[in-house]
Image 1 (cartoon, rainbow, N blue to C red):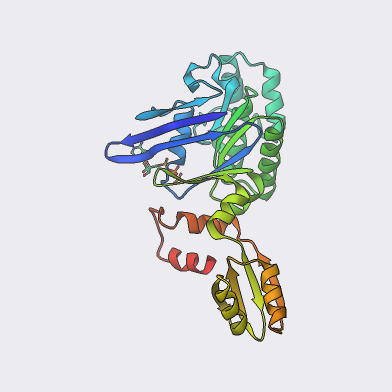
Image 2 (tube, rainbow, N blue to C red):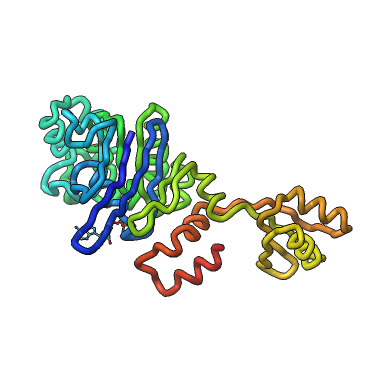
Length: 310
Ligand SMILES: Nc1ncnc2c1ncn2[C@@H]1O[C@H](COP(=O)(O)OP(=O)(O)OP(=O)(O)O)[C@@H](O)[C@H]1O
């Protein structure tokens, strides 16, 4: 379990993390989302004691990271996959880490096997592809068989097979009762991997909760209706309190009303329906909606893309 209370980090005038409080429960995969510069890496670094909070506290399984007698057995972290001595082989890197923490060489062989690195474990890390480096980072995080895993962008640079592998691995680790906290900018992947979400923007928590609740809370569910009398139906739904958008001629999208209500209203007024579809937003749409005011580094085309996504 990871617990943060009023956790704050300032770099000079810049408030990177602003009094955030959250609990990451064991037995779940919790996704950490937010735009570039939102404070995700800073938060993760504070959890593992690489950055000191300016104020507030964060504990892992009840204690600050540094207070654990054997931190590597408590928390495994992948924070910067490139932070490895490039002249060493993967096996030698892992064996050095293991030796300094009283971990057996058998465990080193196990994590090499587990992360699919067996074929390249004797090669210099400097020659590794981004994906191989990520696998080595995950192997390092797993070395102490920790109860808590913190993974910053673990699928970055992985091919589709690698992405599925990470998803399966973290799901299995959570099913074993471990705490898994991971960040990613890939929304479709996060939607498939995480149970819970923590969304931050400009150093503050925007929302937190189960994935589907976060999506529904951000966008609400909608009903898409195609009808030759779409305008009539839209007027009736509006009178019933629905919000109406017209994505194309002959199609209306209604919010704040159920598909059943729409169908019954249509039947009562003899309106012909060609389509009646309850429509749930994607995590990407919800994320765009949630973070639209928290994006610091925005490209010129982003607002138009967001509009289209809504
Ligand atoms: N060492 C530092 N010195 C000064 N400012 C920093 C430092 N580290 C981070 N920041 C600033 O703190 C803010 C949060 O950065 P952080 O790297 O935690 O964001 P992030 O959510 O991980 O972003 P990304 O998705 O781009 O990785 C940013 O504005 C960043 O520029």
